[in-house]
Length: 93
Image 1 (cartoon, rainbow, N blue to C red):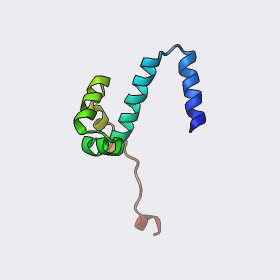
Image 2: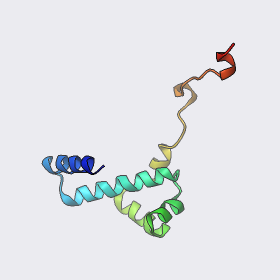
Image 3: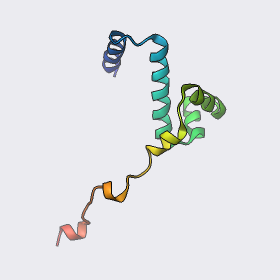
Image 4: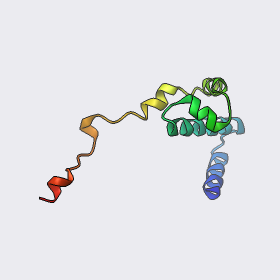
């Protein structure tokens, strides 16, 4: 993982991304990942992060991280886009 982070930092530096922007994007992505792991539940995410839910909400607002976007990524795809699996009983007939 450290190697992947080193590569990412090198790419960001070489492309001219400033420190403030890099830190902002890291925080945003990290919070998005924790929120998705808790299915958008801010209380559980804040507990894992070791902060109060209100603090998490404020940071999300500061970063422009919208909870609706996080939750939208968790919704099941429409039936037309889901893979079709045959039941096991049909497979062994």
